[in-house]
Length: 156
Image 1: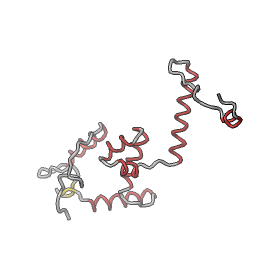
Image 2: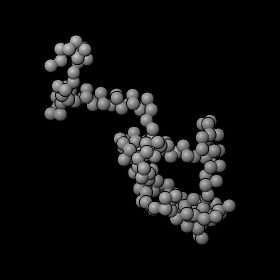
Image 3: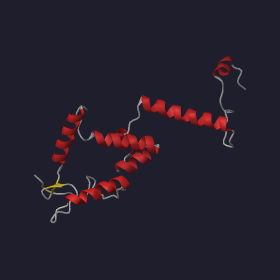
Image 4: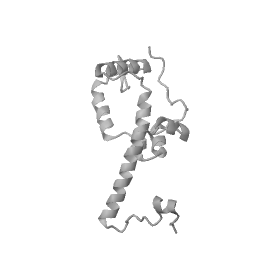
């Protein structure tokens, strides 16, 4: 049963949300289903869908796909992690999720050992490309001390 459509998120602060071309296309397609008396994009019989309907449909989709059901909240973690990987940091996570607390942004976008491996490979690839390209931005290793020299006390 629909009770109300809240005008603001939990923190009571509205914020703009960027709509990509793909999302805009989906919204345009949804206009086909618009009923004369209903201005809601996602509705059933002129009533906006509620959170319960989203949960039920999400659960059914996961069951059909064979993915274990984990709840819709996991989507927030997934988006935060993507924002961190693509955007490169917690500021990207905060921009996408709307978090104002850096600890929450970090919690939702936790990096794993796989992420560490991927970032290490990207860094090394960048270094390899810089060294082999002969560009002006060549990587300098002057500040790198050989561990074997350090252990033997031969570092200057």
